[in-house]
Image 1 (tube, rainbow, N blue to C red):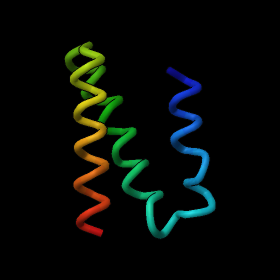
Image 2: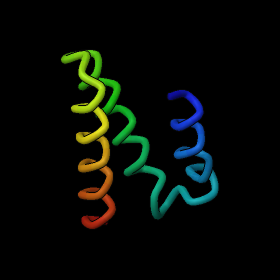
Image 3: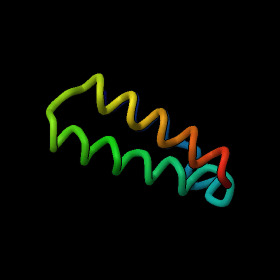
Image 4: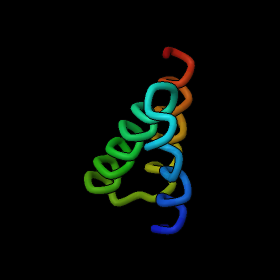
Length: 58
């Protein structure tokens, strides 16, 4: 799981304006939902939906 997070966030520093903020917000949403419900599938779905919504808004 850690390798997946690092792989997904490797371009945040170089592409901060376009994708960085949505990815960081999505990571916090995943962490909060997992801490709240302890459900991995729910956290993955929430993070994916959050990232897609933020990418299409911005």
